[in-house]
Length: 561
Image (cartoon, rainbow, N blue to C red; front, side, top):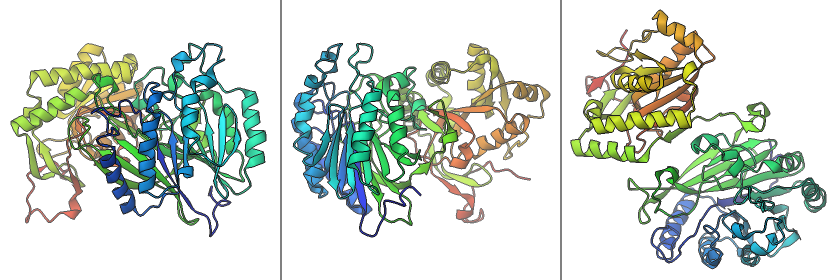
């Protein structure tokens, strides 16, 4: 256990991590952190924090405090952060920062880096009023003693990006700098059995949930601080202290244990709601996290607080904070290949925002959602039902789904059409799959998973043509109308694996509620995209409902022997 050295009866610590406030216009109307709304936004968060029963000792803010170099907004950022700190009883000197690429005017930095310190001065002026107990400082790092045996190391991951090709991207850290940080700071200033909190804006490792969610070909170049790999590994090799890395920038949350250290990535805390380009609209809610060290016999707990929208679109006036509790999962070294983390956690994300709005609008307009007892598989019952036939009986909507699916599989999945196979599940999965087959040239097969109340569990895999294709292809792309818990899709995949256990699987659905998908049913899926994720379709185990004689099913698709 990582914390064997750190824990004792007298020591415990909790850290609130927030990042990426992106304060743009404090007196405007489009941000949750604006002058006219930030108190409501924070007050609701504080209520949920207190409800969680978790006290907070330190606040760490990992950069992008302001937006696009608007350093004149630092004063307002201070107002917001201090308001939050006062509400949760955190001392001002226990608020720690690191710089992000939006926190200085990087376009004004000279190509030779001679004014690197000057362009960062507004940020330095801002943070110096917070951190009183600085015990080491240079242009790259600041080391602060928060309390006895608890330290915070702020690292500037933007420094060294003065070259025109690197502006706005992670900087270059030299070997000399790394040696100095280790020899003069870590080994000399931090006692054995200490807790070291490290803040750097750019992620220093690839998180399992990071790359696939971006759809950005140059993601690693633009966001991953690769030049600091040696710094990360050498710090983590020090077994006598406990290390926790806090990062931002990506707006995609995760928390893992790796290399005898903890890595925390938290989603954005602020940012405008007025984004016109759908490509830049995040589907991940604003959030913050509390990392708690309390008891040696218990795992490190992560309380994730998310600002859940109550409207279809991001709105600067509506939403509620909610929280969930989780543990930090361990990632083994074998899960890394050439510094790139192989996916251990499958990714579910929205393919196209506007299509989602079309689906929701049509369901509402045509009254296509029903509530009842819909037995969708052998083990589970859905309490919600969408009339998929009437939903997709719209040329405009169906064409939109086909067109956006084509863009998704070519630009996002980047499938090799010559070694991939489309499998359409049931009627609408087959319709969509056949259209994509015509446009891509990929071979397409139809598989029945339900009909007349029966699962076709062999589902035509006895068909020698399909079996031959599965043996010789590398990736299978499934099209399906609705995914509730994922049990049906998992049955199909398990049969495919019996034929070829080296296959990789992707799924595209019209509607999918990630909240109800069982992890075990998606353990073999490499990626899962959907056109509608906002529609809640509650799923309950069949055994938790009364027998059919008391509550007959509206629809029964369970397997009958």
